Each structure stands twice: as structure tokens, then as C-alpha cells.
Amino acid sequence: MAGQGRLQGIFTPNMVPLDERGNIHEAELRRYVDWLIDRGVHGLYPNGSTSEFTRFTPEERRRIVQIMVDQTAGRVPILAGAAEANVRETLDACEYYHGLGVRAVAIVAPYYYKLSPDNVYAYFQEIGRNTPVDVTLYNIPMFASPIDVPTIQRLSEECERIVAIKDSSGDLAQMIRMIEAVRPNRPEFSFLTGWDAVLMPMLLIGCDGGTNASSGVVPEVTRKLYDLTMGGRLDEARRVQAWLIRLFDPALYSADFPEGFRVAVQLRGFRMGTGRQPLSERHRAILGELEKTLAALLAEQELTDQPSPLPTAQLDARHVSRIVEGVLAELQQRGVTLS
Image (tube, rainbow, N blue to C red; front, top):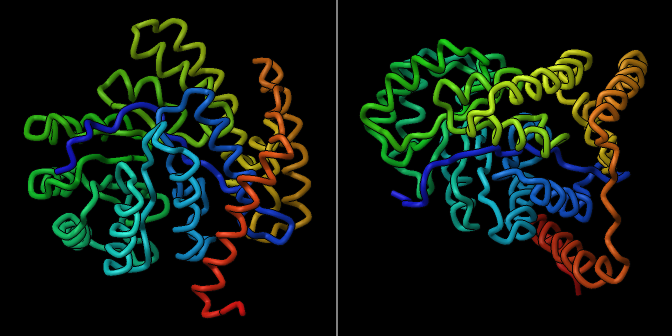
């Protein structure tokens, strides 16, 4: 078992900037990674739901993690989404990300086909027995087969490599049931909440941290909420949690997920580009109104600072060379040779 300590704190499920052709905007992604780390997030979480992992190819998902591991350079741990279409490809992704040196991977229960609890268990048991890297179970019932408490308990007791669960149901009572079922036999097992609106109460009932979309927009606020709650400054924490809900609700519910968060990240000064999901004219108008709402909320907290662009010399020397390396690697994967 990898003795790297439990997963704790705020792990940001970052969005991926796209250029004008809809490809990964590497220089902007690197700038975004630095900005998130500078503002206090404890870790990064590429290839999650907020990262739109299903809208990238397997090769692109691997490239995203490559870029982020390189840019992070060990400053914070990375929890890499490793869910693929079947168990064999998922294990291949586990092998690959292990080779990059990520702290752990996160794997959603099988999606599209709804599975019974016994087959959800069989799926994760196969992964747990064969993965070279620590695994975080990812429970998001709105998009995938749910992982129930008995299944979590069995997997935690039988598979040493399964070290955590990220739960995005927002169900406090269910989280208590999970913790009570698992912690007696696996005290080092981590519990992370993916539901921003209940981050504070989840921490108070025993969660170790969160993987919260809002932390990609206001990393300084989610880090403050974590610190205030863990430090017992609960009156202050309640006020921060209340404001975070005011940001989270319109970003989540006003537009198709995760388009509201794309708008919000752009308001912090990043060129996120147009997402790969075509949008109707009506939806574009909704996003225009949402932008005004989110801008006003950010202004309340004086969160209107914008990241400084990288110096031209730095772009020329470091980022351009990495972009070229990425292009060459992609061409090689496609069987294209350059004479």
C-alpha cells in the first residue's frame, strides 16, 4: 500500500481551457494550475465531471494529466480521474497515471448501463485487486450506478488499494452511514464530498475534504471555508458557506452542467474557450444573464483580480517547447512521421 497519508483538504476538479479550434489550450491550463495552487487548494483533480472527462478522447485525458503533473511539479498531490469505458481500459489508465506519479486515481461506478450493487462491487473488486495505484471510489448517482454502503464497506475491507470515496450525492445522512461502516476497520480511509453546498456540514460530521467545482472558481474561498471549519471558527464558516451556496446554486442550476462554471472561471481571467457541447441560442442567452449574476457575486467578495499573463520570454522558452512536444507526441500516436 502506498504510504503517502490520507487524502485531505480541497482537491479542485478543474476545467480544461480550450483554444479557438477546440483543442486543449496547454499554456492556459498551465497558468490555471499555478493560479489554483497559489490560492491554496490542497490538490488537483483532473478528468472529473467538472473537467468534462467524457468529452475528451482517452489520449487527451492522459495528456491533460501529463501537463498537470509536469506543471504541478510535486507542489500538491494529484487525484486523477481514471474512468474509462470498461475495466481493462480503466486498469490501463491506472497503470499510466501510476507511471506519472499521481497520488491516487478516482474511478466512477460504471455509467450508461445501470448495474446492480453486486456487479458494482465486482467491477471495483477487479480494479482493487489489480491496480498499482491507490483508488478513490467516485459515487455520483445522478450520472452513474450508485455505490451503496454495504459495497463500500466490503471494498474497503477487502481491497487495500481502495483508500477513499468521493461522494457527490450531497446526502449528509448517507455520508454518516459510510463513515460509521468503514472507519472502525479502516481508520485511514478518506471521505471527500463533491457537493459544494454542504462542504461545511460534511467536514463537521467527519469528512476529510472536498472535490468541489466552486474551488476552480474561488479557490481562496473554499480554502478559507475548510480552514475555518477545521479550526472550529464555526460562525465565520457558516457565513462563508452561505455565500458559497449563492455562487454554487446559479452556476449549477441555471445552465447545463458544467457551462455555468466555465462562465465563472472566465470571470476570474482565464480564456476557457467554447465547450465541445454545441449550445442553443436560448442557452447562450441564459449564460449571458448568468455571467452578470456571477460577476456581481464575485464583486461582493472583491474577487475581480485577474491572473497576469506570462512574460513573453517565458512563453517562448518553456511553454512553446512543451506545446511542440505535445503536438509531436499526438502525431506519433496517430502514426504520422515527420521527415
